[in-house]
Length: 158
Image (cartoon, rainbow, N blue to C red):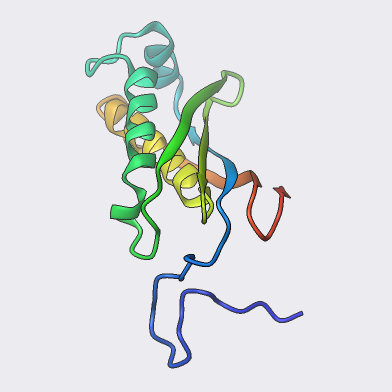
């Protein structure tokens, strides 16, 4: 079965997808990503000694704010009424990594995958911003959709 790109019209112009005929359903998306840091950054984050403040607390708020602003950042995203959003972190001291996990929910005609991915990305960027005075070599990666539910295409589990 050939996949059709939905963000282009017959002439190849970029368009916002028409969701007016779609049913409203409950939709959830979970995305995650990691930032790898050095020992000094990890210790400062865990000890709460980063000069700019509570790194994970600020990153959590930044991720949530980003979810709510996704349609202003990604040109073809619809504006969604977010019914729930969370950003959580898992610390991997052994591998010097911080994993961000963003869950976004809505009741609507289109999914919240882009919102969850945006939330993770901004949370990781915030960690970088708050810790760059300690080490500018931090790396972000493995940003991906974990799961999604709702909508015509059904459930997805990575």
